[in-house]
Length: 249
Image 1 (cartoon, one colour):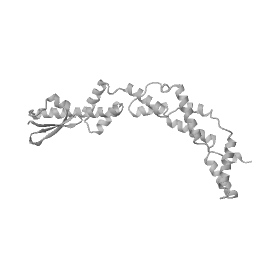
Image 2 (cartoon, helix red, strand yellow):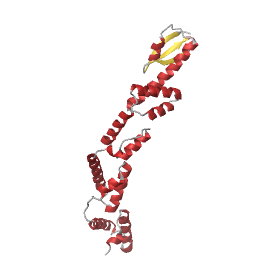
Image 3 (cartoon, helix red, strand yellow):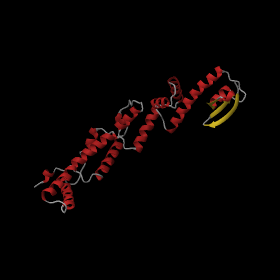
Image 4 (spheres, helix red, strand yellow):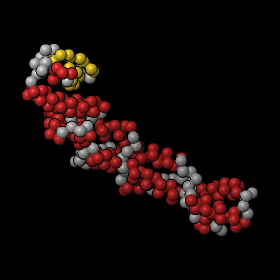
């Protein structure tokens, strides 16, 4: 059969119209490799080679497009190509080629990933390492070296200050517990967090209690009376971490 028509359809791909209205779509590299121009004779053996090579080209170009959005791990690319229904053998060859060409570089990816998370998020070292593991990379270096002591101190202090501003109505004990859990979820070590939390200084806890009590009393005094008013205030204070009995005279 002959190539009757050659039409570029975008993305470095061409549509080859063969005899009897048979058509295939191939990448430009395949066109050049086999000289697939008008009147080119193609037998079935050559057609099989073209189709197979085009499958490899498809896998490779899909992977490159995927990498262009950001650096990718070997695991990510394998899973992505698998979702695209690429054959396992072709996936392996594609990944090997990308590694040789330097498109897959775990060391470079780790450095970029850590820098991005430090600059753009509040993530701590443990969360960063966990996410790297999810991407298929085992971080073999000392986890404590991801962030310098100065960065850790600055980051944790800023997070604590922000949490304090947003939890003014709660007791000191409740605030500390909330900050502890929040920072642990962000990937900071419990031992390190406690060092900073223990240094939190707020005005007198009894004064905090009295301020909240007065606000609640003024809010509900016209709606509830006597024991019912006490119960409402007690429950509200309890939810904020204050034990009503601790401050009863």
